[in-house]
Image (tube, rainbow, N blue to C red; front, side, top):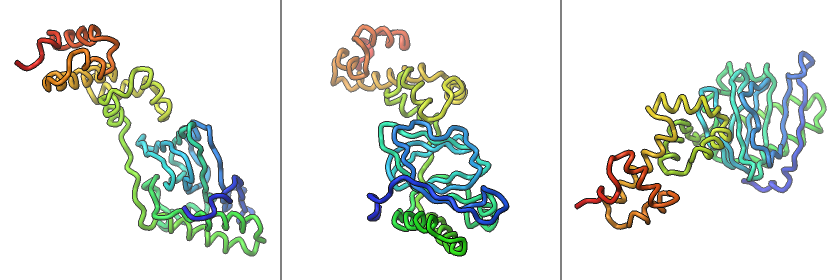
Length: 273
């Protein structure tokens, strides 16, 4: 990040281009959304925006339901006509700087393939913070005759952000949940909170999970947990009490009972030899 971070105080500027519509405009600004957990949910933006993340972490859910992690230095787009959600980590300060274009400008640039919808999230090679703050300042001060030059600068920043970019990899939410459940880091209550934080409806997610995986999340978690127990028992390096504690069971008795229900014998009889 370039020098100028300290001057990135919140504030927005919009300037209209012509008189056809209030939406035909160029905008630039800095927003502080610290403490917010859901920025937008199932949002259809009326204008185009490119957003550079200065601070904070979150998740961008695109129109296809894919989840893209958001981190400082990343860019994402709000593309008109494409529904999306942005979920923020309220425990971290969030600050962003953005450029906004009216529908007419966006349509012209998209038609010429100067702006493209995919990927919705990426990591540009640099964050031109000083140039973005200068654009905001000059948009505010410019007379009508100077606005075309400001638009040209905005366009140059939008194009430069896509050059040589590294695409942020989206992770399928079912695959992500399988990984987390397999690591035993999501219990039932945690899964509900995880769905909420990622803009997912819990009951719909459970149904889709069961359709794709073949069992509900809770049963999948137990199976993966016991598979880890089998590996530890075969290794023969830990006692049953140690394995139960390592896997998060309240007691060796709870572990043994669940193990017996699944495999038909207690863990003591599962050890090799």
